[in-house]
Amino acid sequence: MAWRTRFAPAPTGYLHLGHVVNALHVWGLARAFGGEVLLRIEDHDRTRCRDEYEDALLDDLDWLGFAPDIGSTDSFRAARHDRAHAPRHTQRQSDNDARYAAALAALTACGLTYTCTCTRRDIARHAPRAPGEEPRYPGTCRDAHHADSESLARRARMADGDVPFDDGRLGPVQQSPAAQCGDVLVRDRHGQWTYQFAVVVDDMAHDIDVVIRGEDLLASTGRQLRLAAMLERQRPLSWWHHPLLVHPDGSKLSKANHDTSIRERRAAGAHAAGLLGEAAFLSGLLPAARDLSIDELPALFQSGVNAFSVS
Image (cartoon, rainbow, N blue to C red; front, top):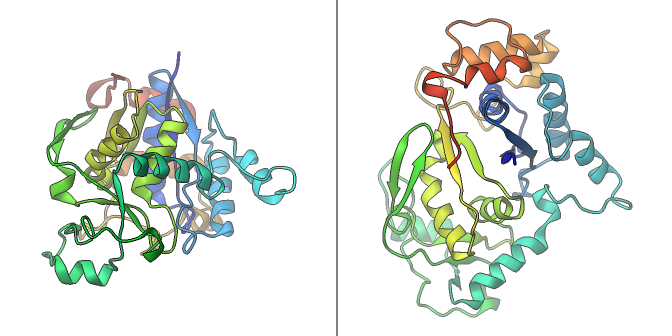
């Protein structure tokens, strides 16, 4: 039986070349080693997500030739544009509030969550950090016993101790979520589900076997594994964190920095095979830039440092 991974963009801006690198790894590893790709739209942050960005990313995937095995681009378009007949999409986060509420209720019933009234300013004041250091929640509300009515924000208690896991590319890794980030925010004070929580719940609901993503999310792995264990996930989960495309100063490409989008490159006359080859070269999958077809992806991952196996 095929194992399953996912491509899960957030419609908070237009896709750029860094997203193409992730798609190359997701589809390449899946096609090379008997996997299937599920498309998920991660629009939990309703303050930043836009319908126009979702439309654009679906169009970009079609143009580049990345066809999901589960969750066609047309199914997302239909579910949003015809709500009367398709009121929800199981792979769009904004359509699945009940799923996250049920998971939160399960944790709460076991005494694993608490109400948090802290703002970001409060946390910064009580837990100062060095530049570039990850913010760590200091546990201000952990034993305060705030009433549920005092805030919509909820945190999950991170137990002490290490979380070991094997990364398909980086090898054995060990992380301590309690020391890294403290108790994890699962719902914010505006009632929005957080990335850390929603992806864990979704990966369980979608039967994901392998998470393939950039190294910028490596630090999230231990806390997500701990949350999954708290939610009694039984299905084993494998990981592959690939290198990021970066600017000369070392900063990663991002939508927030308005890095040149695929949409703009298309408008300027770029062709799909050229963009795929450029992304593959810049990420070290090809020795030189050249046109690359979707059909060639498996060969990029079937030997050498890119070889892969699912545990």
